[in-house]
Image (cartoon, rainbow, N blue to C red; front, side):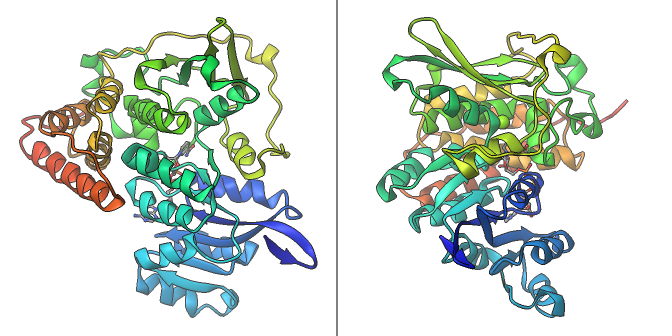
Length: 399
Ligand code: NAD
Ligand code: MG
């Protein structure tokens, strides 16, 4: 606990503070200065946003991507009192800095794995937004969480909802977990229609405002697949007892079905500050500034099955769970490569799943026994995805 003026506060580090989750986390923390103290931030590329965050929160330490950006912040007289470090070493320094009680893991992609793991090893509680950490290294991360006796609290809204819906129940009474999915911007489109969708349409999510990688993942339903894998580890539940239902209004954040046929769910407006606040303050609840849910004005909640043919990425994630070993790490790495290629307009929307499927076809799963093994599998997946993309015959043509 950080002590300031004799008051004990929870010391918080945010890895990825300049991103969508990072900014929302700081917004929640800002509302409760009596409870929290920001100890460390990492901003990577966006130095201007990070500077504004340093001025507002005066953390002990921050990390950026490279030496040049670090020099820029270090030479800024307004930022005296905050240590500036850089690169992977810098990330690790911030992730394990003294005075932090909880680390918000909000870097995007598998880059979040190593610093999050280091924070667990250093005994920090984790508020986990970076789902790729559990997707890639679920068994190893959960073993370490148990060994170190730290709390791993979900920030992903579906997992927060399940965590809340499990409270006060026995895990032996759970029949299945039901993740809700908004369906993304292309819900209802056929495979043929999807082949010509544009990047800007895919980035236009109907209910959630998020970073670009997860927004594309939401449009392909890959995000939901990654969340099934995340739930598999977080709640120790086999893949065949985790289902997905499309719920376009994004009000029911997810559900738990019990053996007596009861279903317990958690609801709220679709804004990540709800789940972030719960992870930060657990087991207390704190104000978020969010509007209260007015069900009468929402009026209609609808549910439908996901279209697995038009959105094959979801099935690929179930397949990776079945394959076991580092298959989810390989799949997730291939997805990152494919999403970046789609964002750069190098491949079309449907090719993302085509590439991932071919990568899984060529992978024989082996059990990773360390984070180093997981990183090797991640590299293999990236390399295999690039090779698959070279052999794609498709030309991207937008109408
Ligand atoms: P974002 O793109 O908005 O932000 C990413 C952050 O990571 C930024 O601070 C960026 O500077 C940093 N970063 C990027 N590459 C990095 C690297 N190589 N090394 C170190 N730092 C790097 O992403 P986001 O939408 O905030 O998502 C963050 C994570 O949270 C993702 O794993 C995502 O799946 C998860 N998540 C996000 C939401 C959401 O609503 N945005 C919801 C649930 C889960
Ligand atoms: Mg989610």
